[in-house]
Length: 76
Image (cartoon, rainbow, N blue to C red):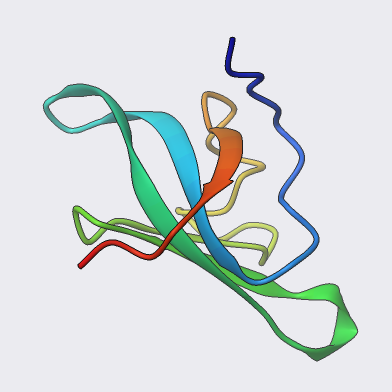
């Protein structure tokens, strides 16, 4: 069984992400990059982006329905 969490993975790489998109629920791959000072960006295979910046429209603080799943191999 897949465990989903609201915690952003601590390492860079490809992970499953589940969120409510413009056209309904999505569960797709995303790539996570970490920057200095604890900032990160998650870019999905559907070209949606989530940021660590508070107050930004795509930050997780404003998107409470975002969950991360297990790490996966990079999609081709």
